[in-house]
Image (tube, rainbow, N blue to C red; front, side, top):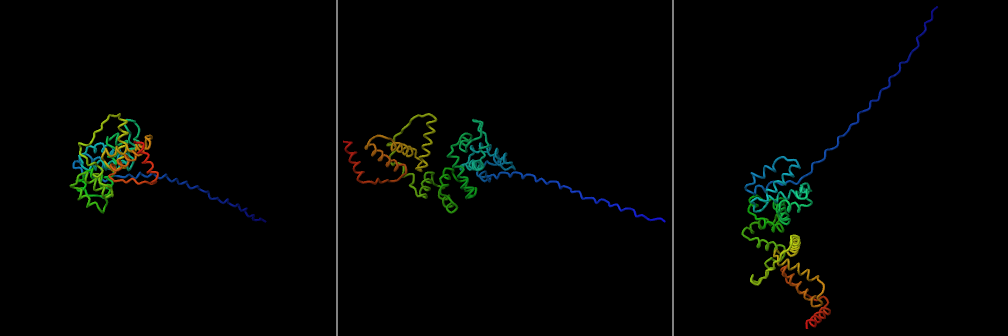
Length: 309
């Protein structure tokens, strides 16, 4: 008798899923943003009649920031010779160079290092005064960037008159001022601006004496001393608002005398008188000396009289 024997059941191993690692997604670093440059519009180029042959090709191409920087430097060196009454071409380029700090990347041939300041660049490379460069920049900023005056108006302006107008002109009074100054001299424009600022016209600060009564003073000095004198005169001019050199050097000397030691009471009163007279001449005003401590002031005046005797 046969017995059927069941075959043993063999369990098949269950395959475990194999974990597959996802590849790490690497995010590429963001590209640095291109610096936002302050670019001039080229409007000043239309003011200068011969601009198309020289300036437009150099600045109206699609340039990289580095190429643009070098193009501005090259064109600025040419623009200083432009026959442009308003000097707006140069002012336009100086405005862009200063706004973007281009000069910091330009090598000074004398030092073989980058220019440290805008003033070092304009005086060293362009051979123009720093005060003139700042005036030209301001003219461009006011008349083109802020007021956006039409080309035909800009073409008729002189830069010396425009420099004065930058102190008072705005969108409300621009038409009136520009029509008024056409027949005026630079001196008259200066007086108009001072009047608008509530200041005394420069004519009032100039002595009414005849030229025959004036005294010429000349002296020689070293280049270093000359620079020191010029710097002092420019500072005095910024304080007085007068462009008469005699007024400004008068103020400088008065300041020195007032601060000098010695001289006793007579010297003190003499310095006070000189200071008052000089301030009147420099600022075109009339000053009245009032005693703060009347008793002490009278005693000092009496003592001064005794010293004179």
